[in-house]
Length: 129
Length: 130
Image 1 (cartoon, each protein chain N blue to C red):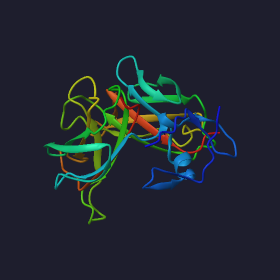
Image 2: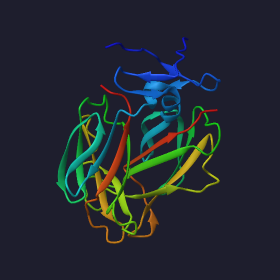
Image 3: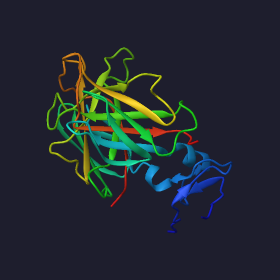
């Protein structure tokens, strides 16, 4: 396998150069919390059901620090367009994320009760180890 | 500095248009502590973070976007290790504050109907740089 070593990129038409390696997502996942299924992913080796609305995603290749950035969004019921909109949050059990995994938490917005979503997508950016 | 000109990028199996790489790559992201003395933990293309009061923050770009129509998503942890407090409501503070060179975000607690500081705020932005 060949490797292209490059620091920055910019459109050929011009513009500001930026760090290509810093901006590329290092992991992504789409999961079904109800069936505990990993529907599609990149750099995710497994997911773990930690309880209602609470899943851990484990990296295949770890991040280099625990300060990477990750975001997520989701839906309780993919077949019901009128299903309640969940509040999707990130979750950690201590004062730092893990370099080897991240967690997503979802709650019913009105009651603040933990609840599984049928569809939760997340993206991770940062530097790999 | 060298420039690689290609219409597509591939690994021998899959390929994507170069535009997908250039336009699909995040141009800025940040992970910051929104409690106490706010502080950036790690970031890309974020110059500074400002505490605007409880649950309200602004940050500026090192390199501005080409316009204010770039896309941003976010995630928040209001409190550690809690099934109900991990998740948080978050929004952009106002359309007028969503600018090419800076943006403001708010973390809200629907239970108390009040702004709330968060132990972790993550924002990822994509679009074209100026």
